[in-house]
Image (cartoon, rainbow, N blue to C red; front, side, top):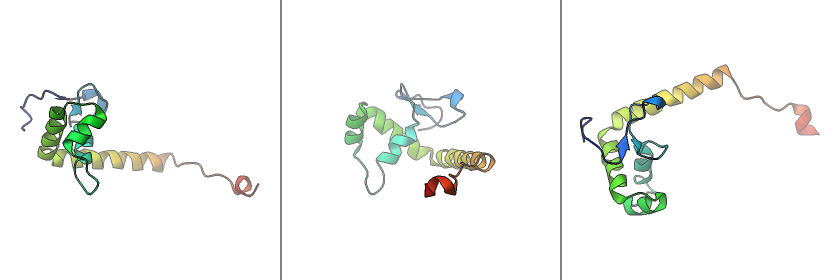
Length: 103
């Protein structure tokens, strides 16, 4: 599916800062569904649709979109990971003092 395709179950979320599409009425990107139907422990699209309470057509649309948009998805995920790493460098997690551990 091209970027000019009109999707029934997917939509952009400009406020998220992401260019990839999200599932309409849900707070997650389409590629999250895709990630659950590929790999060793993958669900079938039918199982995934049932577990999320989505129409099967929505899952299939998300999978098709994600397969056609893997470059964008990988790039955005890498950017998100780098932002998280930068945040952790600027604001490291406090470590408990030894005295609390030995108490």
